[in-house]
Image 1 (cartoon, helix red, strand yellow):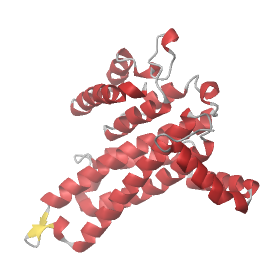
Image 2 (tube, rainbow, N blue to C red):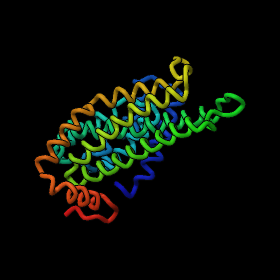
Image 3 (spheres, helix red, strand yellow):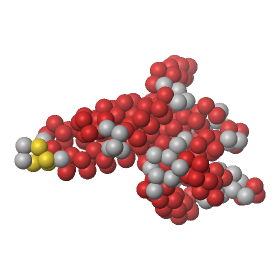
Image 4 (cartoon, one colour):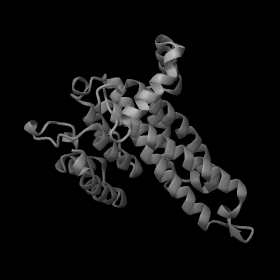
Length: 253
């Protein structure tokens, strides 16, 4: 479905944005998502689905994270997909959470930038202070890195061999979630902890999703065992081959 990905993302953006703005009750959110057919995104056309791939799914999940939707959609996409993608449900769960984290990172970064540019202190926006600029630049770097890692993991999963990339993406997303949580609240100060200000909706999601389907220690252990089993002489070759395979026009052979 990659040729229709732009249309898919536009449809998801309109639906999720409307649900976000209207603070729709969770049951109504799920009903409208099901009506739009998103739980069938990965299902074959013969079964009434979209016949999408994991790159399509991660694009939609990134938007779901951006708009603070619950993980029900992610769990629905995992169901029945383990055999088709040659990856276990635990790995696919990690991929979905990494994609959700990617969207939540985008949203908390946007909120932090907006606040820093509008909060006046000592006669100028706090975004003019170098320490704030440095923190936000590091935040943006983390968000971009997670997005790249998720895209690489989705591409590898579609190729039928994505466990290594998924482990890397989830590990990277978990690490970024902690940095983003701390930075966003440091930039916002006390207002970021209030119930009335919405920042906590996304920072709490970041902490929750980073704990689901494997912590940093879990995925670090997995990658360490994987690399040790392959041998140090294969590390660089594996990294370059897998990266080339994920690039546009790359070969999966």
